[in-house]
Amino acid sequence: MSDLLIRGGRVIDAAGERVADVLVRGGHVVEVGTGLSGDEVLDASGCVVAPGLVDLHVHLREPGMEEAETVDTGARAAALGGFTAVVAMPNTEPAQDDPAVVMAVLAAGERASCDVAPAGCITRGRAGEALAPMGELHDLGVRIFTDDGACVADAGVMRHALDYSRALPGAVVAQHAEDPGLAGSGAMHEGAWSSRLGIPGRPAAAEDIIVARDLILAELTGARVHFLHVSTAGAVEMVRAAKARGLPVTAEAAPHHFTLTDECCASFDPVFKVHPPLRAQADVDAIRAGLADGTIDAIATDHAPHPVEQKERPFEEAPPGMLGLETALALTLTELVAPGLLSLADALALLSWRPAAIAGLESHGQPVEAGSVANLCVIDPDLPWEVDPLRLASKARNTPFAGRKLTGRVRHTLLRGEPVVIDGEAQR
Ligand SMILES: [Zn+2]
Image (cartoon, rainbow, N blue to C red; front, top):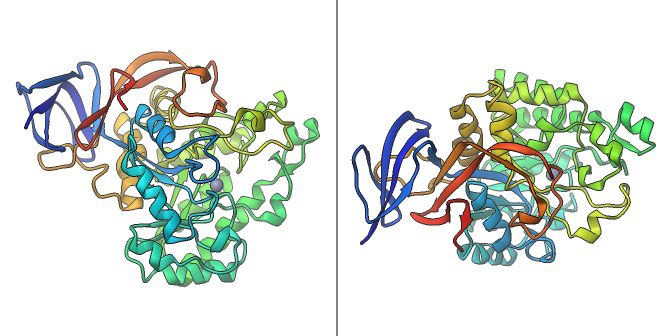
């Protein structure tokens, strides 16, 4: 059996940091040390070798919207972004509320460039009424349940889902926290900019009210709750207080929520339309503080591809969502690590081992040591590059970061020992 050597990198994982060669054989790390040799060598000098990144929040659009993305194209974008596993949101068409749909996504993931863990719906058709067959979906390996794209607005339904999830080992109920009545048909954050631009707003209160309610329900039921794409200062503060009280709550934040504000919408370019919306600077600052102090557990992209013709409709009519897989790591390094807000190890914790633990992905986010599955990424933290939408592997082009100069890029990605990205190029 031939082996592969990742030579001369700075290994960073949950166990610590050291300069070492990493020898991979048969899909596993077999040795970590110095002066090792292998049949095939990947250079990692000047680079960081880390457990593969894990994205808790990705829209792969298959089945149903394959003109925007497929499991195959989305996974390739993920691998190029350093991700070895992604959680596929269930707002497909049909929705992932049924074992057959989940099995189809799993089957597509078998051939993909990263592991694909389908999330399951909380309710049938994401309609917020009858519970989906959560037990049957759990039997297929589903651990994250969400109606993402839609909020479970009815407190009784949410309580029922939380109660039920307690019987499913490792299950977590993940909420898209936006009260639909308050968010209404708003197309951007409600504030000074929405007034000035005449675009209807979605108030921060729409998010805060659901977070407050679901924390009360978490306390009532004892069940795990995860908040998707937290975007308000109020939500960060409530999650911080809930954690201090010992509630089993986790939260993620998306790169666009710690890098962009509602002022971007002044261009009327729908590429800046997303739910929850880009917020005010004070919210961005609060998200950054929440990432720095551990209140927020994970950076998740909410990668949401849309066909060009749909994203080019007028702002209020265009679908919400933006790409994220190929820019998340570089934005984290450029915006959070370079200014000293996070250490590199803290950033990797948010992008790899903490989300892996939330999703119960046991072969991801593991320390780089003999015996662990070789799901790895090699990052050049100093490489400057500029985001060019035309060069993304995603089928879609709706990145809000076009033209942005970033520092740090994935050099190699290994999926179960197989190099799926070498020197920044996808291998399958
Ligand atoms: Zn969402």
